[in-house]
Length: 134
Image (tube, rainbow, N blue to C red; front, side, top):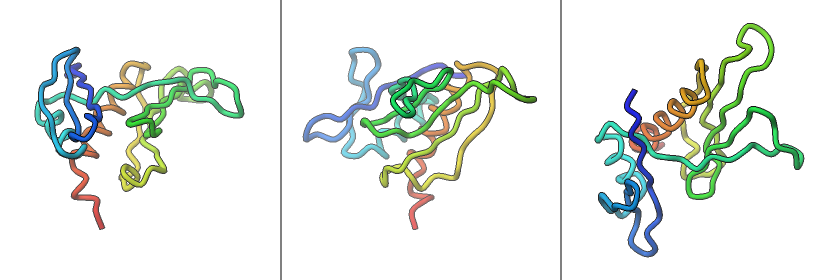
């Protein structure tokens, strides 16, 4: 598993920058090209993570991934049944920039693995956006 995570951030009036720590690695006019750069390095985009809030309450073992302040996916710990103790992940968003996905989702043994899978699949999906355009 390649653990390299790179930030893709909005560079005011200049498109998007790829950042590793405090070092700007590259800049692109749109997020798709930025994600292609990250994917082609064998890395993944470092998404912003927060607790999932439902009805004003933080859900236990439930986290939301965001990019550009838009929710793009979720991970949660399975607490019942045959999958109890595993973690599920899924890409899901209503943001029109990111929503034409193929329903990527899965189950992993650990929270860290779920974060890795979601970030990797979201990076690949955005990098390959042209395949999903109608």
